[in-house]
Length: 237
Image (cartoon, rainbow, N blue to C red; front, side, top):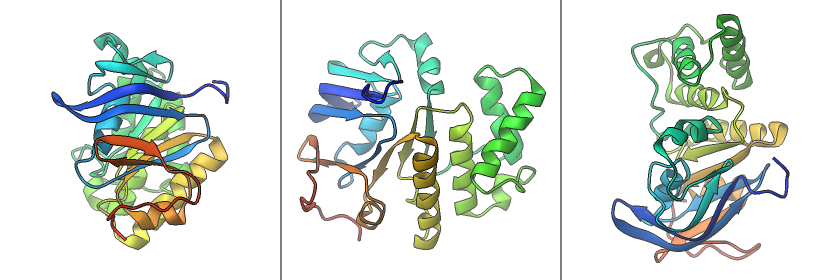
């Protein structure tokens, strides 16, 4: 995708949570290589934007696209193909606890159409090495710390070489030191691979320490913070 073509784009889009509109008139473009934070208090629509991007929430008013797919009225059969173009990282890891790290990743590859066992093994090794977890392939998730589980979740998000990583409060369940390690990993992936990152957070410390573009959700709107403009929100410090 050309650098001047957005990976994700919203124009005058109303964002829903269920049947309720939580953000009116969203305008947002995310380009290759961007690191974009979506910040705001609880209940301001941050996660609803993420759910709209991955076509979990409907987009009924305005325009939206992600990874080459129009989100308005997207057909159900297209949604798996959309999601193959992005990696999604959740706050609570969402690993399958009844199978090993390696089998967690293999499950995703098989679900997204991979057939060749040798190629799957190679790709699993690549992504685990990329997140510093190459020696943990045979561990069960419950044998890992929270930070290690989140690294596995990030490895999972990289399996299909996504255009963008969508991260919903990926440090929310982690202590400060572990969260710092996860942020270093995400910023390295963004810098070295050029993978765009869209990250929801309410932690001011994170987006002040690891600068990026900042979209602020407040009063049923979401707009980009201008450079050097103070963020007037009572966020976690």
